[in-house]
Image (cartoon, rainbow, N blue to C red; front, side, top):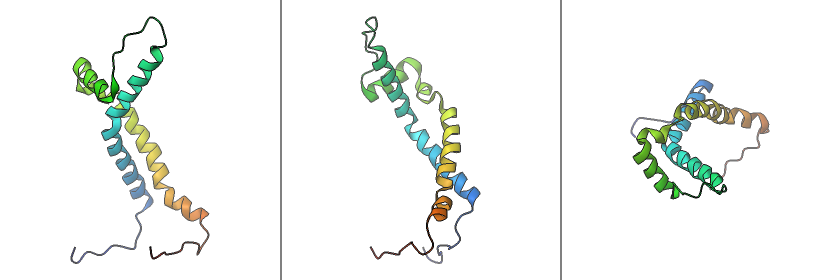
Length: 117
């Protein structure tokens, strides 16, 4: 781009926390239905050990998602999303937001080499 130059000023800590938490929330929005289907399959596998429960309700991840949408509606794929987003906003923002600060704390001065690779 013409006229735009990268800045040498790193983002502030609140910006790092907010952007890390937001990125984790967006990723969680995309993967939450898959995680929900995975948990349902795991629960089904645990209940199949009982002799009384031999009927298989879910078959594979896509089959589980399809069954959930047909029987419970599309909103069922996102049951528990609020708790997941709260977890991502707190844990991911701290973990990713503090990464550079902690890395600098434990990295001795002058140990970072610039490689030409």
